[in-house]
Length: 247
Image 1 (tube, helix red, strand yellow):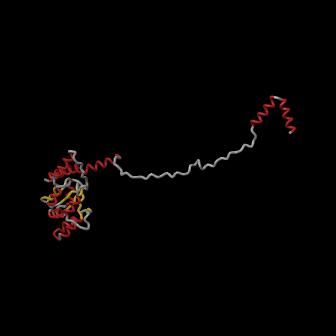
Image 2 (tube, helix red, strand yellow):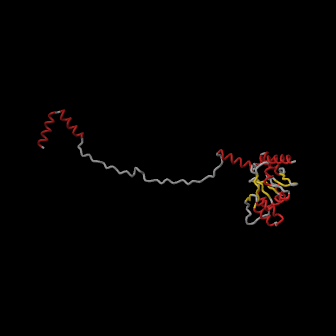
Image 3 (cartoon, helix red, strand yellow):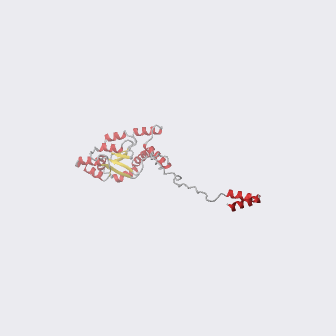
């Protein structure tokens, strides 16, 4: 009988693993009624749950569940001691505590993004859990831990996803992860202000104007002309010498 239960559990875990991305260690949210049933059936949860699920587990609860057990008095004192040894997941009801059932429903939310199992003996809570896809449900039947098979709502959701009409939360995470690895994820656009280039004065306008230098030397063209005349006609050379002497 034990081998059959473990086979069924393995089959159901494989379903949630493949379709909703459940991974070890499994996080189990315990309600007070489940702890009370374990106490009555003398079930050691820390030992038997990992053995039954064949995986590492984390036993968890919330502040609302602990507060509910305190208000119920001595009858559930043993269940409170079991719950106090679990990891406390922070729920958003710190100031105004809710009932344990309402708190656990809020923890799984829509789509169960944190991949919680819910362990409860509350029939009303079990019915509500089954109406939400992707939430494994644990109960105690005849002093034995039992993992419920996937609910009809969960199976219908998977079929719709397989038909390509929806994308599951697990697939969305995988797509985003692949996009990030390939560098295809869109980065938020950042508006950058263009700096205006401050135009300084034109460097050519800063240069000092060059002053025109006056030629002090006599033009060389007149001297050349005079030499030509002297070389051509020696008589004119004599006349020029006389003119220079008289002058």
